[in-house]
Image (cartoon, rainbow, N blue to C red; front, side, top):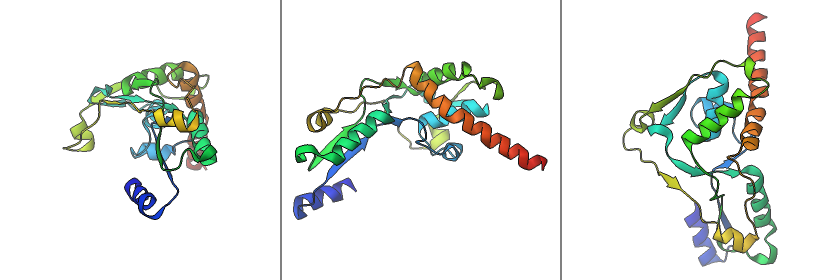
Length: 199
């Protein structure tokens, strides 16, 4: 799709800006049901495993590193693209990510676990079921290839938007915030399901 848009811009004079979100993270980005069928972002999947007491699966050991971006930083950049001051975004491809917020999936799981164990609602949930290493070929099928490191260049974002990501999503306040956004919802869902079974 990006190539089609670019071609229209070149040939037909279409005014456009392409942006690429890199691992945006934050409350309400995913539906928890999506995590149940394995089609959610990594963090939603990890949180669901924690609150449901199922093992956290680390594909090929979870050593793959990603640069995570807080949704608040991402929305700020997106707003500036829409605002397009001085038409500086016209015809540009802009990565919206945080190259300094790098962590492996395993490290992210450990950070979330630490926040989960200290959460005030922790006692309502099952015990931690542990980490389980799974081969990518058995999880995704043969032929699957992953990228070990994926770090965005945000040079265009700085130049066109005067934007710099500010929030460290790999610190305790952020992981605590994500857990706090999901835990009460899971409790309400579980309570609703139990009420249906007893009435």
